[in-house]
Length: 130
Image 1 (spheres, rainbow, N blue to C red):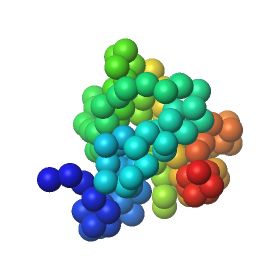
Image 2 (cartoon, helix red, strand yellow):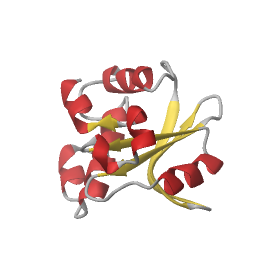
Image 3 (cartoon, helix red, strand yellow):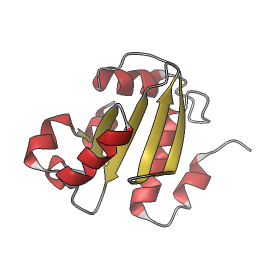
């Protein structure tokens, strides 16, 4: 059964909800009707360009749990670290960097991340403006 907005909304944890929501929007075959529009916007925004990929949420890593785990067609790993109610740490992002080619912070506000990371943060305002 395809993932739809009802399945996404039933998630209890806010962070899980937002991670599932972003993953759903990134899915080019999702029931949202956007096709590749959102994923193309997102990959352009992070400087990756348009490409094929596989996506998972809540993937276990040696260093923790990736909120959103993306494996590109050319074998690159992109981890999206989502913060909706907690503060991101520089150490957490650096730890994920060991297992990924890119770590992309996403959150409600840039202030949820360390100052030196804020220029890389995608906010939910950015998503809404899409």
